[in-house]
Length: 606
Image (tube, rainbow, N blue to C red):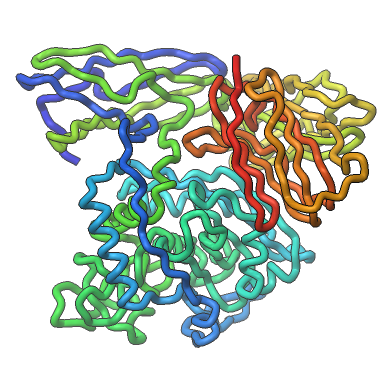
């Protein structure tokens, strides 16, 4: 990053302190001492180019990983949860043939020659799928998952790649858990979430394997086969010593982003297609953290600390700059959907993404801090102002303090649930406290359709507590019901919004048995406040109905359930997953049922 003295920002650090629920705007001054005007791109906002180039159509090469994993032999040992040494395999990702890699390299170069825009920051949205057994094995905690996300961010942030956990789901299935390899396509097809914009991670048992992944040029970008499969006990805090610090998953995500093993093809030219990773042969040295040089004709010692070799977690701590550039090229060429993900936290934003500063002049610029959905505590972000022709980026560190219940983290800012009439559901709110003094808490509510279990108590430093919110729709009519539960503590209070949507019962319409899959046009269209869709299901299927905006961002999940043969009605109330009304505009309804897929436009009017 090159910071030019000719462009300055006052103040050089932005700070704000507000109460929970407040919004404030801070003004900065940008000064340009050049004798020509300067346009600055602001990367805290989404950075879709104003005139994006057509998507580059890169060739894909379907892998044969199943046969490859059958041929592999054990090469490591790790501890299981009972303290026994297990013979295992470090990585199950299949090596790519040289001929294919030459095609991949040509695709990257052709893509770069088109001068397609790419963003400085990449936000990889993670959808985590926990597979666990009926005896509880593999039922990992949220702390372990969040610990793994932290490991990802520590490893990839220097290359402007960040990871955001957006969903976690749990599936109890003994077959899936005990042999993730054999049942891979089955559980992936049922559990995956939008692989174009999400990294899907599946944790469970292999057995014997620590993990595997697929390279970006394997499968189509939207294929459910993409993602990372990882041994649950290799996560931070797991039992799989010496592979239990989370770097097995870091290694597999490296494959997901296009990196090969540093020892690929040993001491040969283009061994991993990265110039600044020294060559190393592919013998037993790849498991050793010793300072060796197994390819003396190539400059540099063996990259034993590189995440893409096979040393244990304690030895791994780096990628190279060349690997960072290769990941950027791979994302732009083979995973461009990741570039469509938002890069700005919701609590800080601006109204523009480009600002012009006149020659030898200054402009004032407003930045908004929004505390309406935040828990008390400290928040940090960086705002990047970039001038591409000067190769100049000015960094503005920004900090927000929310006064109120400090040092308390909640797993949800609000709770939303959808039920049918006469149903019950449990929603679990996790509270984690990191303050020095005890936190006394009590939940107060006058909502008659929710019962709170564990609603009062105390927390010491480092403790967590789950609060159960039991929703019930007994004798209630379809519609939306909302209200606030107040969390009162000795360090402040805050509301937790609740929303329960009671849906019309799904069912077979007039006993009709449809002959084929079909989705009706929504009616009315355009609509306000609601619109209805009819779905015909010829065979028992898992059906999902999801609304996206035109940029591909998910707005709301209307349905995600296994349905019997029949004709079903769905209603969209023009609200997102948080229960907030959406903006007027065009939206895409995507309905998937087995091998059948349907996309259609819906227009919402204000």
